Length: 173
Image (cartoon, rainbow, N blue to C red; front, side, top):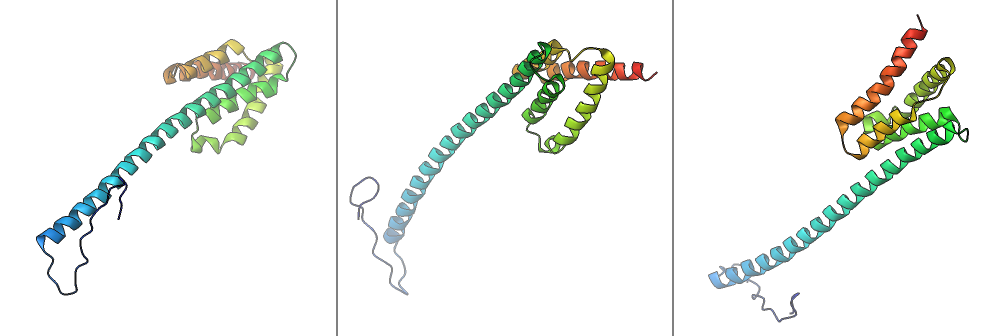
């Protein structure tokens, strides 16, 4: 019999029923089990290493994709300022891209509701404010996200939302 090394391996003779195993036959069986366990361990470690590398690459790919989607939303907002894109849809696309980039299943289930709320809010503010969203303020959110600065992203988004809330409060007085 040849093992994975290509060398001939000896196997202990099968134990006879009722026979008491000898130390040498147990030793050979233990050695065989250890060899198999070692081979399995090497395989498991190799697979775990490949999986970790794959997962790391997958995570990097997902982050890259999320950043590209947010950047596309910003580009749509810039195109909207030039009259080449719908301002409402571009602004919503940016915010939904940020929501989706979170990859948070709890928040993702509210995607349609958030889009509807944004549609209502943005229409209201754009109509009464006389201008569209501040692209630079939205870019600050994206820049913080790219820099992996959650506090900065939170603050930048809070500034956008705060401005809208202040405007709505002022307009409703």
